[in-house]
Length: 379
Image (tube, rainbow, N blue to C red; front, side, top):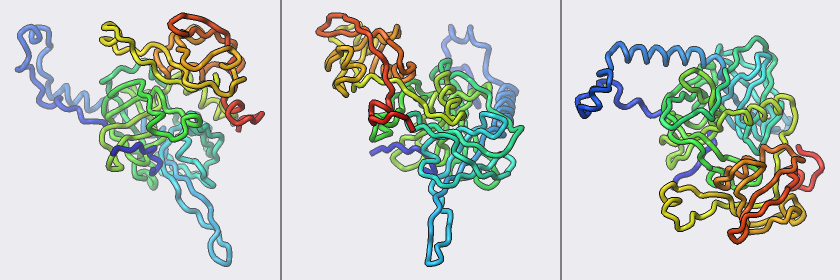
């Protein structure tokens, strides 16, 4: 049975047919349109571009180690016990580093090793459970930073490069490992498979990649061929405990950068909340829907608290939300994501179906933390 590992200590498949690729098996019509077989010069040019990318990307990637301080013996001496290791990347030249939240969870001490081998004590500036992201701070300046990309431009089968600290290989010298592969799929909803508490953690809209990812890779960047970061490595699915070609990364887009900016500022991230549990809608018995495999809308399975945003707006179980604040909803993961990134306090128009009749209501978006815990202030 497969399991998901958020690789704190805890594909890129190989480019299969480039070497020796010819057009002998192609039909005459395809041959006429093709430039001809790849040459050794083409392969060397491709190799040089991969080498250049690695040389530019590596200095922005760091190794991260987390420790707990424990008291031992009658003399109550203090020792650091390693509890986790992972990866990170530099987002500000003045020593700000992004990583996965689970890499530094429950840590008393954190150390960071830069690409030149220099080691620093790090402070957890802020950590966010919902996104599984954290920002660290070290006392350093003039550091090289990643170049931001946009995961919304990614397409399946594009090349990507994972860079990080698998199995702690970069703990001593800081030299991150880099592997390459393709985008296997986009928009993977893995929340139910990765976490036992979907109200606390969200792992939706992930990038699936064949790039080799192993325990210790978590928190490292996923680059495109232009050397821009498009994802943050966060998990693998495996039956053996190591890479089997199913790696997942948080997409880097405007929302992700907003979260990191908030954490960098030492602030807690606020997420919009409706107060509902939702599921995907089974497609109706229509040939058109069956062919496109589109599950339109998100079905409300429960409303809680009863006086929360959804309950106060009159939404009920079995209502199907088809549009939220002007955004068409194709499934539960999209609704969770769109609501979560809607500013708290927004008055949003919700279109929904009740017994196949379209209705609309206005919902005042609440604060996820406050409504789930009853506290006045998020942590």
